[in-house]
Image 1 (cartoon, rainbow, N blue to C red):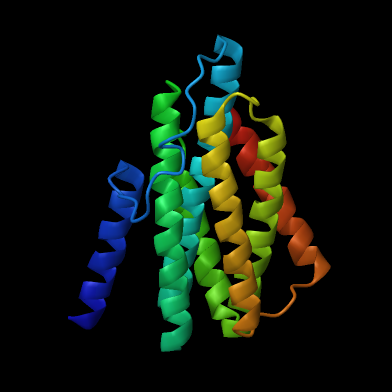
Image 2: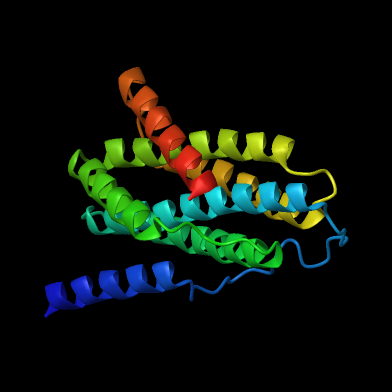
Length: 208
């Protein structure tokens, strides 16, 4: 029954993630941001950028769920679960901002989730230090990606900028924590492959 419970738990969390019923535990960063009527082209671009960020959080939920079940170390499992909870805040925040901008989430979210879950399981099978190193590298690349979005978001879109800035802060902390727990630096071919995969995802999610 323990295995059955685990499988049902994973399925339940996946469905909640994809259905958009995940709630944030922390306040929405854009709650008190000044409201500005953006031109239509700026609104559409901001919505597309936030859709990309939402896809990243879909992937994060799948990755950390898989890495958590793939380790036998209770401390490391708890760390992945904690990171997933904070990423769930990001998931809720980005979805809310997309709705505020009149946009939509990616039509390929089930595909992003399934692919990321498989990658997370593969990372976990390589051992805890590699899995933690994968987490750290993922967070470093996401942090760089968010910095790029802060440069691209309309200067008057204060709410989106507040959300992205808080996400960037959280991602940096997650990456540092993973290295402190024993994560190793991934070899450069792995880092390059991750960058290529991320580029494919972000380019596709910007449109679909």
